[in-house]
Image 1 (cartoon, rainbow, N blue to C red):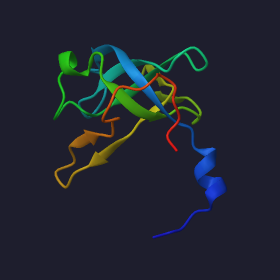
Image 2 (image 1 turned 90 degrees about the horizontal axis):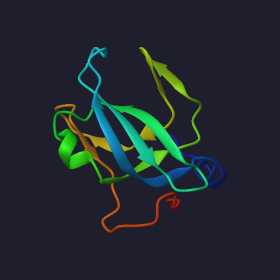
Image 3 (image 1 turned 90 degrees about the vertical axis):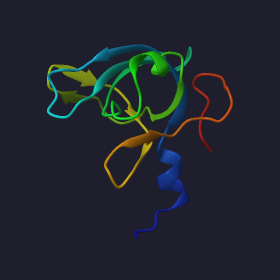
Image 4 (image 1 turned 135 degrees about the vertical axis):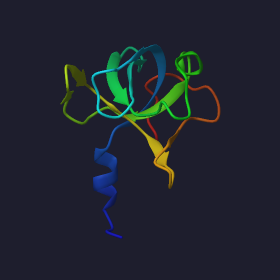
Length: 112
């Protein structure tokens, strides 16, 4: 395992946000959703593509808080521009369990 410095970790902006919209993303090779996530006033609303259809349906994602990297450059995924990366734990069967706060927090709060 490669080690990183504290400065490397500090450069990554991991923030809490609330999912406010979920749509199917049929243009992807692997099943995915298109999400809109509210990160509060300072960061605003960002879009993300997430391959989390195995364990999560659209209804349960609405209103769910997630943790995402908000300072990666935007990434084009087919016809969609992803503006943040939702974090999760990839299981052996490739399904993703979302990394989420265990209590409600303010949108935009930074993971430390």
